Amino acid sequence: MSATILVADDDRAIRTVLNQALARLGHDVRMTGNATTLWRWIADGEGDLVITDVIMPDENGLDLIPRIKKLRPDLRVIVMSAQNTLLTAVKATERGAFEYLPKPFDLRELISVVERALSAPVSTADDEEEVDDEQLPLIGRSSAMQEIYRSIARLMGTDLSVLITGESGTGKELVARALHDFGKRRSGPFVAINMAAIPRELIESELFGHERGSFTGAAQRSAGRFEQAKGGTLFLDEIGDMPFEAQTRLLRVLQEGEYTSVGGRAPIRADSRIIAATHRDLSQLIRQGTFREDLFYRLNVAPIRIPPLRERTADIPALVRHFAGQAAKEGLPAKVLDEAAMERLRRYRWPGNVRELENLVRRLAALYSQEVIGVDVIDSELAATPSELPAASGAAADEGLGSAVERHINEYFVAHKGAMPAAGLYDRILREVERPLIVATLVATRGNQIKAAHVLGLNRNTLRKKIRELDIPVVRGLK
Image (cartoon, rainbow, N blue to C red; front, side):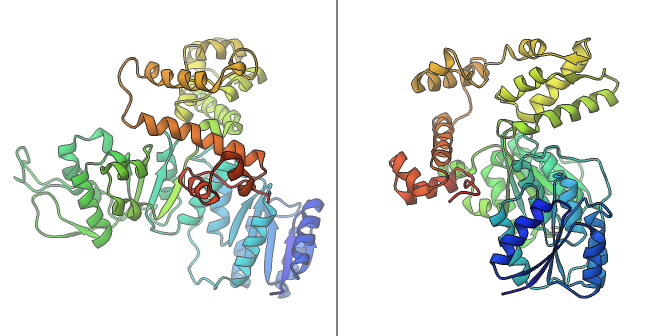
């Protein structure tokens, strides 16, 4: 269907690209480089859809949105911004934007958003309270982090259950707290419980509370985490370590919306949003019979995957500056890293992810006297860690695949200092080899899954299934 689309961006190249793309779809496109002209068009009743940048010469595009919603509540607004932070995504959503797109954007995705905006029914929801806190809980402007910011912005106005997955140290609790702090339950408590840190026999009492005399040592009634989280958010960390019998009770809460305390009879109404997180592969646990499949589907209503730091190395400089700034506020000496040192950090594998990087930055601030940290210091700090990426040249580059895999497996046992690593090593190693193989093949074939399947020797449907199972992003912008 043809529509009049108002585009405001002070970048002439972006206006030209949008004009050509939208005009080819049959839309009438009106373009301007400032907010004043855009507002005049809107006030005159023109346009069926608005696409606006945030930073313009005369006014911030986000500040226009409340005025637009007040004057013309049915007019949809799509926001674009090079200020790719969580706060930008949250503010755009809370002020009433239909969608937020970080720059540089994928043109096909923008066209899809335009089509949805023109066809979606009008919402009658009231505007949420605006968030002005500039203290960002999450750091990074990589494309992987942009997807997380957009997910948080979309989910903050809902009570949907969220399952956050990611390796240890990636910041799963930070994402959970952001969902709470920017959500509609922000005035309620945020209660966290780590399933791996509670003895199995005490899990049900910790979650649901217990009555006096319900077991030996229960001298008085105790409220559980569900009761403590009333009106707020309950964060179930390391849900993959939850005992099977406790999973059954949790499933009933999610299904029925009520529970009973240990030793109690009267049902208690549950009133909290559930956010769960795990570093484990729940699909593997389901196959092993240690995690309930029906509970997985109840928790996985809205999944968010946190990428490991090695997949978002572009964010390392911003993270280093952030952690160095935090250390300085706590009284430690201010430090900066030279470019060679920063490049060394980008090449490191980061088995401990963001948590390991934070510890390193604090250690640099505390133990070294020089204000500018060079690559020699970083080399000495990382020298004892066996989990680095192989070098691009030299002996490591000539290492055969079998030798590289053998070395990588040996590192698991070195990392555990002689103790056996957690069960499931066979599937874990296969996954770590299989995923980069498929990703590299898709990149080499420019995203053509037919060609990739042929190169890999797989059936195309099998390749598609593996792409879904391994959470491999489709190569964007390519056919």
